[in-house]
Length: 305
Image (cartoon, rainbow, N blue to C red; front, side, top):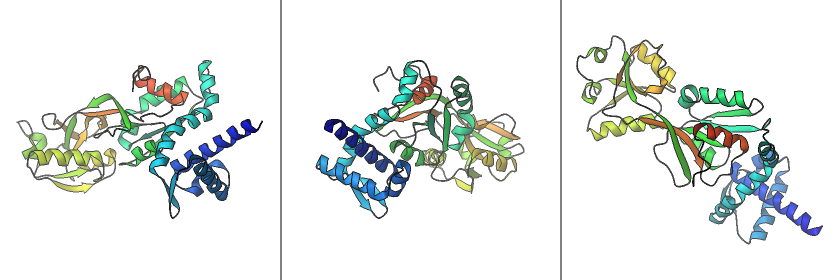
């Protein structure tokens, strides 16, 4: 009886530790766990005594994992996640998957142009699964992924950290878009970077991968470029290009065919842009996350990731 109580208590401590690590805040962790802040603090202290190591550093209202805490988190998170989703996993093993949640992080362009068909198919196959689509920008999606706030992310990835597995499933070319009456739209010869250089570009914010890609390519060719406007989201960019406020370099996926613009391929200068599944290495996947991933890559879980 005492051993059973001990195991239950240890699980509570480990689960509290994982939630605090993910939230990086005692108050937010207490809210999710439906316990008081002092209880959270006491449980963390008890776990630190048992492990014989300091697991968290406190910085004002925030907390961060120590190096020892990071090691423990990597060991414990799959275990607690597996126990928390045991009912769903058991149901899926019996061929039933009627409830649960799927949390996906994706940028605006991915959510608008890449994911809709996949989400529709998943919803038709598993109508009882609630899909939470987190619209992220810049590095916020990667942080959510590493903090286990989402099951997976979908989108482009220019640099792949060791802690991440990236599985591209589709790619698109880069396109110069201009107003229909723009001088570049009427050039008889192939448009070059030198031709584009004098014209102001309309680009997404500087922290987005598109800006970095444009900057890299122009620098590689030792050419100047100017940004006439920063605009968040491809739909806004396309609308302003239609109005003649500048030109832009976009990924082909964002063109629907209904725009009043000219589209000019730039494959000679810009690499294709891949979109893929982004997951944390070593993560425990819920049954619903597994089913969604297998829609893109049916051999994902058979491979040695």
